[in-house]
Length: 168
Image (tube, rainbow, N blue to C red; front, side):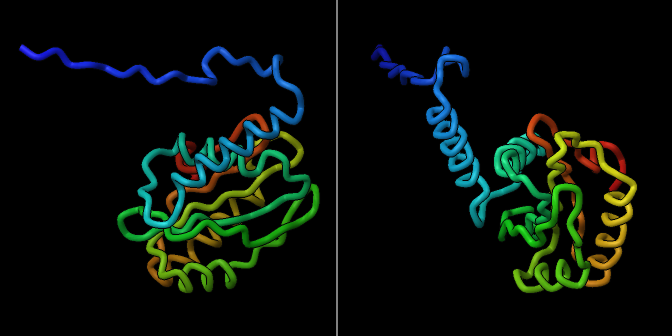
């Protein structure tokens, strides 16, 4: 009987504590993590879990000082077509135009979308305006057969999924 050899891969980051890093090293790790997750969200990849999406969006939007609204456009098998930041605003809001969202969805031939925006205040709780906007966008996209799967509101430390809250 032949014995199998198992190669153990060292984890260079195992046991590393944020308190042991200087500011440049922390920025480098965030950049590396964002790049690793962006690779997973490249065109053609399957959107596999809300948690992975949440983590990616938190890292991507964590340092934004102004509100940004965007869409993750997907095909009918929930494979990523494109991730686009569509609107930039101020510290407490961004004007989002349904016409532009519909145009972008049609431009990439999306079958589904996930909305995202950040709250620079650090509080990820969706506002009534966020809920109304999501309904308006969902209704506009339904006219062209594009499904809205979720809307994430992201802050540096947390995020809220409309789908998990039953708001979609």
